[in-house]
Amino acid sequence: MFKKLLGIAPKLENDGSYSPSKLALKLAVPAKTDYENISYQPYQGKKSKIVVVFTEQKNMTMQNDKMFSTGNHPVEAILPMLHLKKAGFEFNIVTPNGKPVVFEMWAMPSEDENVINFYNEYKNQFENPGNLQDFVDNSLGDDFSYAAVFVPGGHGAMLGIPEDDNVGKILHWAHDKDLFTITLCHGPGSLLSTKLNGNEFIYKGYQMTVFPDSVDKQTPMIGYIPGHMPWKLNEKLIELGAVIVNKKSDKSTHIDRKLITGASPLASNELGKLAANTLLKELK
Image (tube, rainbow, N blue to C red; front, top):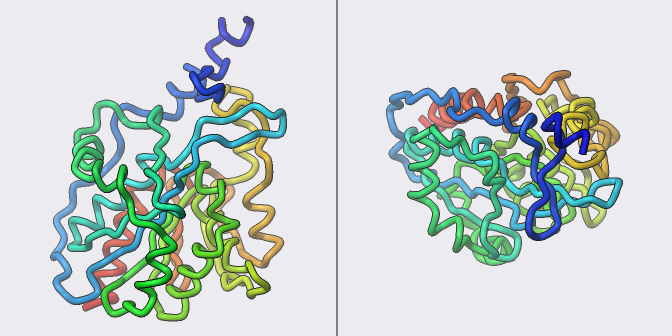
């Protein structure tokens, strides 16, 4: 009751999960994003496709057994895609089993027409994505059509994605074929999949920006998440040899070889610009 009065009690959803408190939403979910409507010279070559790997899972079980209502963060997905689309790229949207993309709809910026219009334009593809297994079985030989793999953030990127053999296969494919890999916030959890089946972690020694464990540790205090995280993303990446260059959940981005990363939802616009400009420069 005390937490409810202060507005820091997570909101109980119909399925028994919890979405962020009123205070957390006020602090962390602005009605408009910082998206910059930039005019690019659109890419017109053959490598015009980007495969986007979304999670299809919603609920994360925290250390206290409460479930966090999560999924893909809409801003972290859509702002980079807006920039990449304007730069002339098209998307092959997939989920591990072809189930609908799950978004943190509570994080949708309610007054941002660019984000909402993009979501509505691609809603049918979000609801009817491709199956990652099918992509692995049929499209890994088609690296001539693809420029990059994009894994959006949101805590949902830590659900199933890091343990999915096919995610590991597609990231190894991108790495081996010299394609770009783009991800941000909790999306770098996907990179853990490259060590599955006895494989070497291919990002050992890579510098990257990732949402800090220290911030995830603090957010239960304002009711953003209903308990402490089930495992620490930064800690696992560092154990495998990744070098995390940010300490704050800020706008920072980084590029190391063909890996492009962003630190948090605040980095979504900057990551989109960096990815679009980098791909256009590389593919001239």
